[in-house]
Length: 325
Image (cartoon, rainbow, N blue to C red; front, side, top):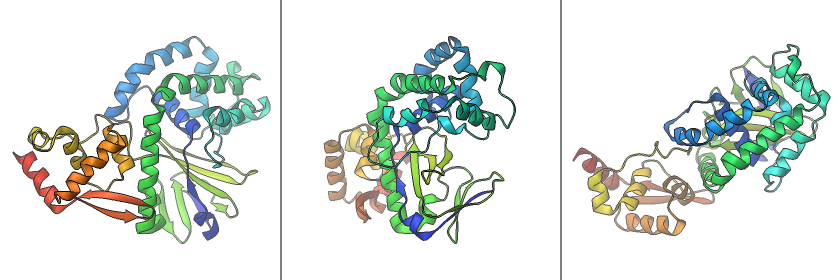
């Protein structure tokens, strides 16, 4: 199995970060797959998949390059550069290293993603990095950027929740199940996947955890820059259809917007998460939470620097009664 041995200093200095490029790569993977992984992804695919298919049909090189680079058991490294973890880089800043990849490295990375097989004649060329960057640029501007504020809120909400789990249950709670095949084994050992890769010692490196809204993930590293990253699907996916349904009777009693907040508090959530999941403004969510707190239907507790809200026993009884009726 893939195993990272992480020393205490590396773990203490690790960070959760937002990456526009990682979000775009995950969107590209979803477009290339062409089928929704969850109900909330269907509308997004219906809106953008036809244009993506038309774009790729008009560019045979890109149409062959993307599945070769991202469709195997290992991504071509040049197309999934490891985030820096510095500041809040723009998409263009993160894309620059992809465009700057040398032809020799792009061909070598692509050969690895193809399992060591020789490159097909169509892909044995010097402009692979430019072609890949052009596809990513198209996906960002056409399918991700228009919805980026909402996606970013969902990503940031996941980071808040993970930080809360970390403060309550340590790294075992925060990292186990982060992505399929990944779990904290204890003794500074992190299983990152089920592949038979040699263990890696992570000492004196920067370790980053990068949530994306699609249900996909990967790991990457840059040994020269001493950076490692785990990209994982965040808990609040693009799932309008995945939200819990509000019983009509509860909606009439509390109002649909306030009732949707109470339904979502079946598990602890921050105001940032509630804003992302309901689509309501921060002020509206705050007012609903105050009413629910005053009525004894919700409670709150501090988790590190954030405040998490949850449904009380009284709230559970009310929701259960309305669902039953």
